[in-house]
Length: 107
Image (tube, rainbow, N blue to C red):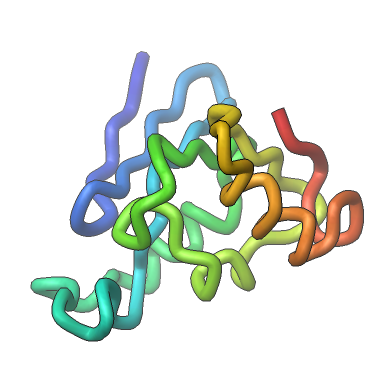
């Protein structure tokens, strides 16, 4: 059985056979020079499910999808997935956070 959980904004978690993929974890804070806010507070249970996700996927580098401030909830058990970009902005930000120190891997 596939489980789908809406988290907030464009963030969701899909789980199948005890493997989970979370997408675009913007869970708190303002983005786009404080012009955008979440419409509701992210539930603590959803935050915990994000933390426990095996894979974290970023669809693209806009801050309402890839928000570096929100990466602090993840640990060395999470693997991050994102596309390569010509400007390498997402890769650079992840490197700045600490490749190998704060996550299980980067795909």
